[in-house]
Image (tube, rainbow, N blue to C red; front, side, top):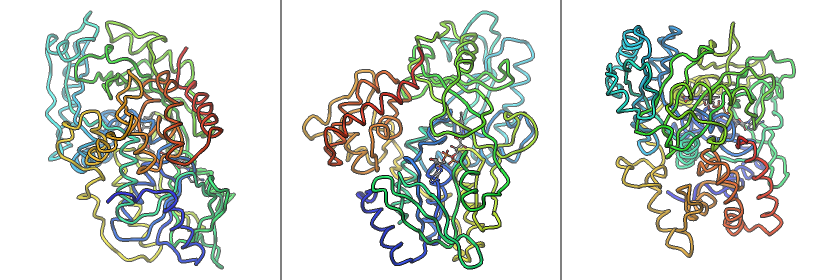
Amino acid sequence: MGRLMRRDKMRSRIRARSEKQIPWDIAVVGGGATGMGVAVDAAARGLDVVLVEAHDFGKGTSSRSTKLVHGGVRYLEQGNIPLVMSALKERGLMRKNAPHLVHDLAFVVPNYSWWEAPFYGIGLKMYDLLAGKYGFGASRLLSREETLKRLPGLEPEGLLGGVVYYDGQFDDARLLIHLAMTAADHGAALLNYCPAIGFERDEDGYVNGVTVRDEETGRELSIPARVVVNATGVFTDQVRRLADPEAEPLMVTSQGIHLVFDRSFLRGETALMVPRTSDGRVLFVIPWHGHAVAGTTDTPVDAPSLEPKPLEEEIEFILETAGRYLTRPPSRKDVLAVYAGLRPLVRGEGKTSALSRDHVIHVDNSGLLTITGGKWTTYRHMAEDCLDHAITLGKLPDVPCSTKELRIHGYVEDSGSLGSLEVYGSDAEAIRELAKGPKLAAQLHPDLPYIAAEVVWAAREEMARSVEDVLARRTRALFLNAEAAIAIAEPVARLLSAELGRDEAWIAAQVSEFCALAEQYRVR
Ligand SMILES: Cc1cc2nc3c(=O)[nH]c(=O)nc-3n(C[C@H](O)[C@H](O)[C@H](O)COP(=O)(O)OP(=O)(O)OC[C@H]3O[C@@H](n4cnc5c(N)ncnc54)[C@H](O)[C@@H]3O)c2cc1C
């Protein structure tokens, strides 16, 4: 397909339609997993869909997850069987439709008490059973020796054995970009750096459009639409209040952080799962892009923010908990990056960790349709549900959902052979071609696999507009190694400026903005 994800073209398409006031079938506000899933589903049904994102696609929670495509072993314990079953099915569909981005991963639950093997063994057999034909592999009990063979860095003292089970793992921000490209391939118009700042209404007071501001030009635009979908995650209530200042809050927010270490802390190809930490949560240490990621926490937060800050006690908690299970306990100086994300949780009783991860579809009196809650793993199912409601609400053509079978942009079966360009799937070949250009095959930093051609590709084909877009979400440099990301900010800014036609002042501003942001991803 190619050349579809061009911001100037997208902007012109949207503007032309606004000038003539031709309504879109659906306008989506929010470019995270939820909103992008809705855009993909709508476009695949042949509907006219436009999506606006206030910052960059995936800037919110959707780039800050634990990177698991899972049914959620924890929700089994809470007795939420329908959620687990639905997520296990979605896990299977995600791997089928995006094999370049979603992989199986073996997890080991180590047993240090006699009761843990039968307890977790039975629980995980149930997990296998609920997956049915979407299963990823059978769980089984491991001897002490087998457990240590799979997890060579595990603390051997007092270890009795373990249980191995299988789940999925992915690169969240990359999948998001590939969903954007899938939506664009099917005709959706998508604009980043374009916040919704208000809603349009018809004579009866129903929302029939959204007002946006293009942050690059400062121009405001009114986008008419038959249905407006609010998919803004932890910002859901703020956006609902743009339509109805009296809207009762739907959401609560909780923060989770992750620490990223060198891979030597978790050797082997298996993840470690600690089923019950001292605060009653699950902790994972997982291999990811040649590093080890440990998390997460659950800290209630009062106000949403696009760049949440990790708390000292969260950092200490993960270091301490992971340290109990690893022969070489990590310390602060071993942390290559720390990142925080906010969970969009639907209000209910009790602690945030006990709140349901089911999604909710809500229609305000103004007719604004909100979809929120859920998990990354269930984005497709959420979108299908949302579209079914939107079609009724907007009296749109009743075309059935087709995303169960829809291949995600870049689909390729044997992506393993693509090496460090695996996440691009079928686009890897075009990036290799680009890398034949002068200096574009050069690795940007010895500790990271990224080459200069990926920066050019991100600007030309994936709507990257800033150093942060490239280093945080098109590549995952900032999430893997904040210091290394800082070191390459300037060369990345120069490559981008050549692509986007910017000047020296822009380069200087970009480097200084990015370095200030990246400081928050470092632990001292
Ligand atoms: C710590 C943590 C770990 C997690 N781990 C997993 C996991 O391993 N597996 C899993 O399946 N799920 C996981 N989740 C859950 C999952 O990440 C979220 O459910 C999902 O990313 C939410 O996506 P979203 O699109 O609803 O929200 P977001 O990704 O936050 O997207 C909302 C978007 O709306 C935009 N926006 C806000 N206001 C406006 C406006 N006025 N105009 C335009 N745009 C606007 C924001 O900029 C943002 O990009 C995790 C969540 C957290 C916090």
